[in-house]
Image (cartoon, rainbow, N blue to C red):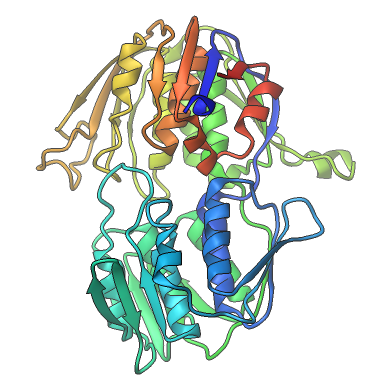
Length: 451
């Protein structure tokens, strides 16, 4: 579709300020949590992204009234009249999001039944739902598989369980939290994910009346309660979007201040950024320092001139280097002198985007071997999950087709850094996780236009 093509005139350093709102990976789950309450919830600083539209549609199908609040970015969700939705209506959303699996626990509590259509999302690996289904069964759910999807029921209610994840999956941890908070008895989850978005979801559930203890060694204990109420919450800022703009500043030799970005959520990324040779300044104490109401800080990122330095990195679960940070940063690493290594240990099919970078002049080789310091679960399987990046490389314009959300933004950064005019196809996919990215590009001085 011609309207889904962005023409990018590259070679101009990005300069200026942009702002990030609430984290995509928290906001959609916070919206699902509203289903558990018996009174309205208010979520602030909600980004205008496609995922929010999808979840709003799913909630409205189930009788939740979703409206805009008084403040810009405020969302009000009233679950007073939760009701069943037809499988045909739910299937309209099949393929557009993986969120429906997380509605199961709340819907089982509210209605006694739920339906899961075929799940979508980015194609970066299988991300099986086996554990989700297994966990729901442990809580007492009955699962019936049919050609159109899975029908779940809870004839005897849901009860606490002892669970251990084979891998600290964010989605599986969210599933357990959203189901356990109203299950009868105590749930213990071992090897849980502890990402900042998970902790923020726990804060929301605690505001609603949940009793959740986060112990050491990735153990979370949830004591079920009979009812929950609405919440008011401002989510943590989107650390993935903030890092994406930081990488764009580095790749284009520019300077970008990301208002709203928060240091404590990004410490691992900030250390790597400095190791490469990027400069940064924390400005989030601006209000306290100046006393000026309405002034907002964040983090300023810039290329200080000179050469960038190669690094060896491995993605990992929090507090490791986030998998969603690697794609935009690899674009910046194509401009670093020497040999950089990126060992992807979270998703097995997340380096396919490097082929397009090579077509633009980068020198990136992918391998099946674990090239990081520690062998990972993909090491003995047939997955290209390590990348070697030789630089610096002079990037030139190309026609690019976006494969998934994060790779898409990486391709966009490459087009901005390259000499000449690129055409980026499928650019609307970026709207899944980046609010008003075209307006932000314009504010940073980028020369882009719709075809």
